[in-house]
Length: 230
Image (tube, rainbow, N blue to C red):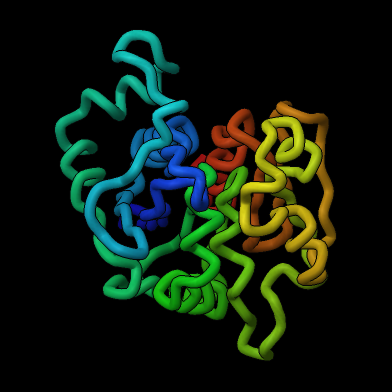
């Protein structure tokens, strides 16, 4: 049987109260999606509210000017139908999947940490020993999840994510509701990182986390290795 992977995306499309549009960073969704599909996995999309995936307009150019994975995502009819009608996370049984994957994009910082459906999905997958992976701001979907013993799933684990230095560099450290690196450290994560804007990812058992948009393909490769699909 093929492996099943649930990609959980944000529903949030505004940068706090600034009015600036945001959402998912397209490449962080598209590159892992195609890596999983091309390896033979079945991939579903879910979000807190269900419905269409909000793509950060800063991550999408006219077709023909994007990275190949993004153009492929934007022009594939099946994929576009999925992206237009994600399921609500609260209505999905995470136990039926072999892995969860959280793409990044700034929208994740506003809704994923507070959504009970997301929290339940992560805790269900974690308790069952499934792979839980995230890239860039995607680990925002992990900060509320607890182990069956009541501790953060990040506690004592080697972790990675969008760094505070990178957040300051893009000028959004005062806009996001919290700094992701700082929060992961506060939860007991053993945060490590590479150079700014360079691919970097960490695997600690069933937990896989990556640093920035440049790391999405690397995180996807770790997921496929963890699932025995390479």
